[in-house]
Amino acid sequence: MSRFMDSFTQTLPQVRVRFGAGIRHELGAEIEALGARRALILSTPPQADLAQELSDLIGGLSAGVYAGARMHTPVDVSEQATAHARNIGADCVVAVGGGSTTGLGKAIAWRTDLPQIVVPTTYAGSEATPILGQTEGGRKTTLSDRRVQPEVILYDPELVATLPAAMTVTSALNAMAHAAEGLYARDRGPLTTMMALEGLTAFRDALPAEVQDPAHPRARGATLYGAWLCGTVLGTVGMALHHKLCHTLGGSFDLPHAETHAIVLPHAIAYNDRAVPDQLAPLSELLGGPSPGAALHRFAAGLGAPTALRELGLQESDLDRTVEIATQNPYWNPRPLEPAALRALLQRAWEGAEPEA
Image (cartoon, rainbow, N blue to C red; front, side, top):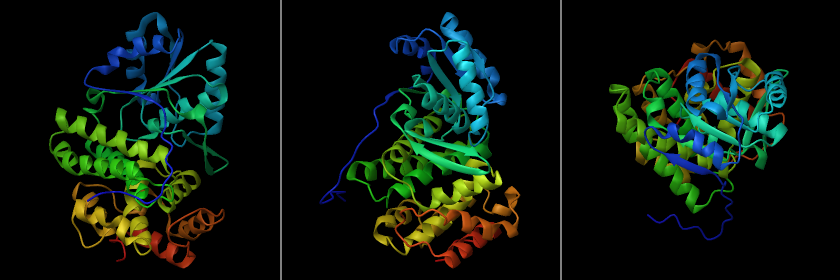
């Protein structure tokens, strides 16, 4: 079916993307192509060894490793890392890892305008966007700025081959959330809709095989391809209720990013399905199910994803506060934000129940 739209405006992010097994070995050439000579390699503490491998790989082009990235990109960590980058004379940052490390690279770039190269090891998709989310004082805020858009992404399927099954599933569902909300975005266009559906299809087809055989090279490549498409959608159109709820839960209650997205997504989609059923119908068709929310819930549960916010440590008493924070600042959503309905949505997500039809 054609995705023709009568009227639309679309601005696409400018980024160089290279994809292929072993492409990380081209890192040095990409640094030089940016005119850089002192690249600071960033990672989280658990991925410090991989960061050191890349530092050794590029030899004299490395200005060292900073392995202090943290979830939700705390402002104090970003400022410390920025000061370190300046002190050592870094002229480029290389983020190797998932959303936490990519976020730190963006935070440094926002403060310094240094060019960025991202080598993803999850399906976060943040590398394909000009969006930075930061946490300070228990609140997560986002901004969009050209300085935040990485210049180069190196997608190497070999680097996600050892991603644990549980993290594989939640990271993939996090990526799928970008595409799902992109289907009804106010500024969507035919190209972003096609990318969203292609990305969702890639995950639908490859993720079950990947769970059965984590080292499956073609499945790993296909899901990384899906992550790029879904991330590009995130970087091109605005998000709505789902992302607002996840930012609230992550920033205010320190819930893990990917797991929170995996749990909330079916419920947020079910909430908005009442307002835009035609735009979300492809989700039911792709995943199979009586409704988009139910289809997503069953797909996630079938892959062993967490389905209840209480499993992440959120207290039932936190749900009212979540609604309060999520509705404080007005933002666009295809269905009006109704506090009672949002509270019911969160209750079902907290319990792990299937979304309300």
